[in-house]
Image 1 (cartoon, rainbow, N blue to C red):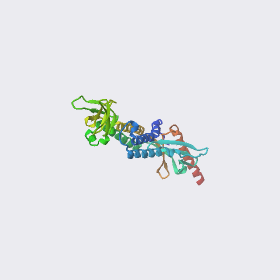
Image 2: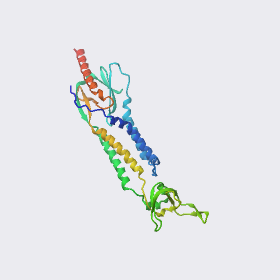
Image 3: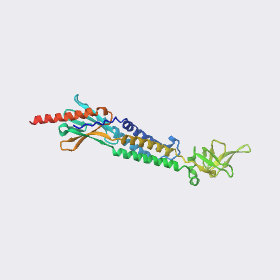
Length: 307
């Protein structure tokens, strides 16, 4: 019987990754649908929010659905649970005297398996590839936030109805030959009448364009005097951080290869592979050795009945 001397420790990162992936995707969906949650004035992106929610559901099902497939077991049965993120997910094995079952839907008679097994080390290629995708997406958001650092003022002047997007952003205004003034927009008035005090009396003065208040000063500046506006990059940097963290977690958890004990059936085809990963990693050798012993015992019993 083949045994392996390399016994890697359990991977708690994969379990944490399984628990955190869906919540992170839900948070991303919330930020896409309600960008004001992170202080952004961007328009909601509902299609992106729906995509994040769909991914959250997929990862939730992949990570938890198989773990719930447990049923009552006899006293002589042994149980083992492995978990490989983005691979087979969580699987629950139940070993009885006559068969081994995976969850509740698959049971393999022990007499149909070979007691000799081999140990192999596989890397979950899909998870590794997914990690690189998340890393590229995170870098794309980061580059976008760094490169596109200013608002297109000419475009904004052609669409003055969007002036409210400048609220809480940093702008620079220059009136005539005066020194430029830089500050945060604390108030926005669309193009309409504004109250002004003239000779101690309050008058409503008609303005043809939007007005901006900077740093809560009493003076209001027309949109035409804005010479520079800092783009709102909060959303881009938020997505860069989320995808970057997710990519690092996925790449770190899928970098190492996972050890499997592979049993063949009597026709020489790989029938069952048990991973040294998950909550029962410390019982891997005990379970595999007991499975091999019971397979040999089942074959001896079958041979005795034939004789």
